Amino acid sequence: MAQHFSLAACDVVGFDLDHTLCRYNLPESAPLIYNSFAEFLVKEKGYDKELLTVTPEDWDFCCKGLALDLEDGNFIKLADNGTVLRASHGTRMMAPEELAKEYGRKEWKHFMSDTGMACRSGKYYIYDNYFDLPGALLCARVVDSLTKQHNGQKTFDFWKDIVAGIQHNYKMSAFKENCGIYFPEIKRDPGRYLHSCPESVKKWLRQLRNAGKILLLITSSHSDYCRLLCKHILGNDFADLFDIVITNALKPGFFSHLPSQRPFRRLEDDEEQEALPSLDKPGWYSQGNAVHLYELLKKMTGKPEPKVVYFGDSMHSDIFPARHYSNWETVLILEELRGDRDWKPEESEPLEKKGKYEGQKAKPLYSLSNKWGSFFIDSISGLENTEDPSVYTWSCKRISTYSTIAIPSIEAIAELPLDYKFTRFSSSNSKTAGYYPGPPLVLANGESPTTR
View (tube, rainbow, N blue to C red):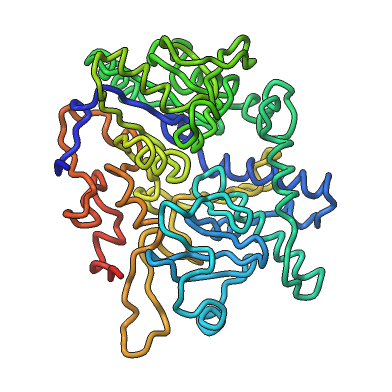
């Protein structure tokens, strides 16, 4: 494979929406997501009211890439070889001795090869994106509460209530019915939770179209919510920017399922209609699969193997499946590359001046967690005759394995010429080569971690 990647060489440019084209104001959106679940658990399922109170310090628990063991309530951070680097029971971090006793130096019991390990399983859940992370804090606090109530409870069965909370707040009809907390609040004040696309990004999208690229929008959000987001961030004429818009894509199944399992559906007034035997023309569709989409792209480009690049923020839903199942080029939107450079604590306002969801201000979820350390590397403590050697995390390894490049935002590349040559991740390059405009500070400043 060539060492460099260029958008000019691509025939098709596809985008995820949430946290990719549409960036959220994370210190505002995280408490809103947290509340949408917490209020459901307290009011509908009888959980402790303490869950409703969150301090700014509590948000430090949030870190992408953590796995929750659904049986024992432990959160873990994995090394690239599947061993456990750090762990907590609920929000209580385990000391090195407890960690060694619980997990030792062996692979975590649920660890499998990259292709075998999903984010969603009946036994564990991996927190992979910014919609997930407030749920990590909530679940950890639920474990704390249940452990306290039941005097050191060892097994847990709260996940079914979390799933019920997802269904209540985020089901397909929730936007239209104005039910739950999340959608009514976003509708009420979208500017508070969403960042408009900078002019540079809008100009860049038009530049891609003018260069003859086919533009796709593939989102798991439903069409009514997608329309609200796109109008706010791109303007009322947003649909003119895209050849094909696919909503309720149900990723990663969009990439991994057979056409018969996941056909495309027409939309009328945001309601899904009959299943389509194939995809014959550009337009706005629901559900679907990458196989039928690629057949249409062949017709549109007149090429037997059109080259597709897909931008997304989720390793589980976007990057891994697009690369593994469809062999597309992939650009990972990774706000962790911004680190904590942008983050300055705000001066606290009196509570009476704050709105309903303002009392629990979160730091940006991409900033460094003091509890969990770097998203990219960590040190192994407690080994004899070593000076805490650093190792890559499992999350970091997946980035270099499945991403073509990783960038902090689309804005970071919008003013580059389309034929700009990015150095891609590859086995022959260093593990930091594919980060643009540069590797995370922790990798750039530190010594290369041990690869095991």
